[in-house]
Structures are given as C-alpha cells and as structure tokens.
Length: 331
Image 1 (tube, rainbow, N blue to C red):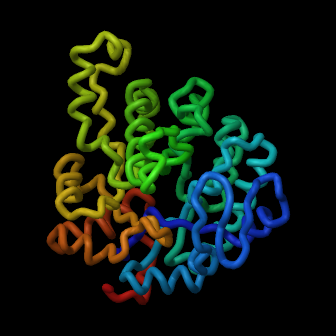
Image 2 (cartoon, rainbow, N blue to C red):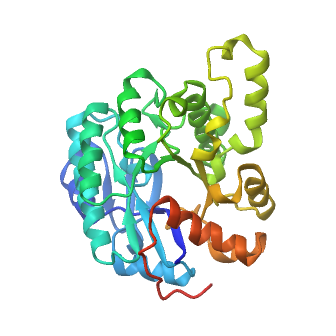
C-alpha cells in the first residue's frame, strides 16, 4: 500500500480566481504572496495550486499520495452562508479537478459552509457524490463551538455518512500572552484542538453519533497528554455530572496526525492512543509542516510501525486500497 499524507493543503485556482475577483473576502493574492484575514501572509508556492508541483513535492519527501483539504485561510466562517456557499463550491470543484488529474495519488476532503448547518449538510452530500472522502472543518465557527445545538443535524448526517471529519485549528480565541513570537499558532493551535475535542466529548456528540470519526491535527494538541485530567474531573466535579459516564469511550474513533516535531512526543502519542489511530500528516506546504516526514517517522519507530502509520492506517480509514505509489524516494 502507498504512503498517504492526510494533512496536506491545496488552494485551487478556482478559489484564487474567486478571491481575486470578489473583494468582499478581503484577500489579495499578488506577487506570489497571500495577504488577508485569518492568517499571517504566506508565500503561494506552486504546490498550493499546481498538480505537477504538488506531486513533485510529495516525491521529494518520499510520500506516494495525499488526501488534500482546505487550509484555515479558506474557511471564512464569518461570511454569510450565501457567500460561503459560493466559496466552498469553488473549493470543492477545484479539489475534484485537481485530484482527477492524478486520481491514483490524490483524494480530497470537502470544504463546507458550516456556519449554515443546513447548507453544509446539502454541500456535504453533494461533495460525497462528487468523490470527496470526508470533510474538513475548523475547530471554531468564528467563535461558535462545534458542540452547540445548531450543529447537531450536521453531526448526525456526518455520522450516518461515516467518513472521517478532519478538525483543523481555526479562529483561535484571542489571548494577549500569545500575541507575540507566533505563539497564537505554536500554542494556540494545540489549545484550539484540545478545546474542540473535549467539548465534543463532554457534550456527547460522539456518544450520540457512533458512526462519527474525527481526525485531530498536530498530534491532537494537548488532548493526548491531558486526557487523564478530563477523566479525573468527570469523577469528582459536579460540573461534568451530565456528561457521558465514560468520556473517553469514543477514543477509538479519534485519529491523530504525526505533527509533533519531536520523536519522543510522537512515540508517547502512539503509546497513548494506539498505533492504529495515528496517521501520517505533514501540513505541507506551509512552513510549520514536517520538513522530512518519512525520515522523522523512521527516527521514532521501526519499519513495521512506520508502514502502519504512513500506509496501512490512512489506507484503511479512507478506503484507499486502490491508490498507486508515486515516484518519490526517501529524502
């Protein structure tokens, strides 16, 4: 089975054209750089939008294929549903075209206007019909939390569909102490993931939807390290008495990418959640990505565990047995 990166970003040309023509999104893409809301400026390297460049990048780091998704700068959850629907439609059409160029190596996750849950349900079903392998959402919907009642129908439908939903940190809560040194990303992103998953567990969203499977990025944030604290609080604090009896019962339906940037932390993650629930994920082509992902895995694990994390687990979760290997050689 080929190695598959499940955390890999694309900004398709359809979206670039839309954002360049519609100033209401507040984005400028000029001189090879993205400037706009929700993210510091970043270079628009060709592997964001060019299939050949994406495949060449995968080859250089020794990865055969990828399940692509939208990066947080494309979420725009503060926009009304109509504008968000247009953007998500352009994103999903772009993803389908992008992956159709090399379907043996590339698959995609749907981008959804989740700020309008009913619209998101329709968009998700349409995306699945068009070939999406699941969906990608932000951890915060412009300040609204995914466990709030208005999202219950979406989670029910997602559970019925049964494909993975990837949660990407987005719309991080402001914190003055994180305002310098890029700590809003370095610390804030893991905090956002931890908040999102623990709220979903406490609200019983996973307990009520047994078909729902979630992918948590950046090694799951601080959740794997602090899940025992959540379990302990459930036993001693009256604030949690209305939550499910065993808050960690759905742990086998939570999946974690490999972005810890530390071999010992990655080994701890595998011990804590089980190697079957850890998947190769890089965050390419952003600068916070794993720079040498396969060799970083090999530095942490023997070959059989590397194979399960990079090949078997992504292939099983996304039903990618038919994908073919690429031309990449280990970096």
